[in-house]
Length: 108
Image 1 (cartoon, rainbow, N blue to C red):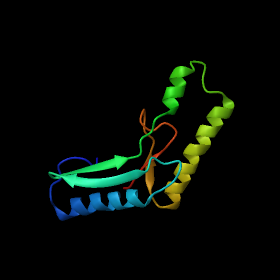
Image 2: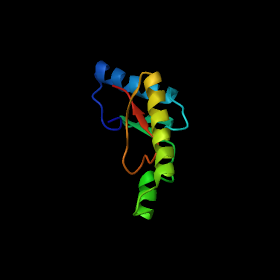
Image 3: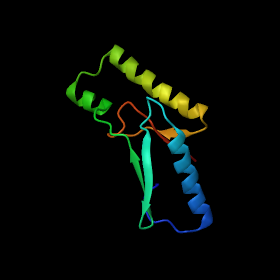
Image 4: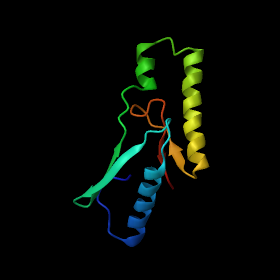
């Protein structure tokens, strides 16, 4: 959504900049935080934290599931990230493989 060729209409550019500004301000231990943004050849590039381990990795290692305590821990982390986004008027989406037990924020 944020990377690609943009028509240089003012509304579209402002909309993209609002999203980028919101992402730059969000910092929380349960979010995949944006590190920097840069533009090259009419494209925006967003650089996020590296996530080296995900819930999916653990599920693939444990065919019988994660167990109640581990599941509780991950659900709590996701809810803390969601609560932080809501407190800062930002919507969110859960990612698949790349997010693990973190939440990627985005704005409407």
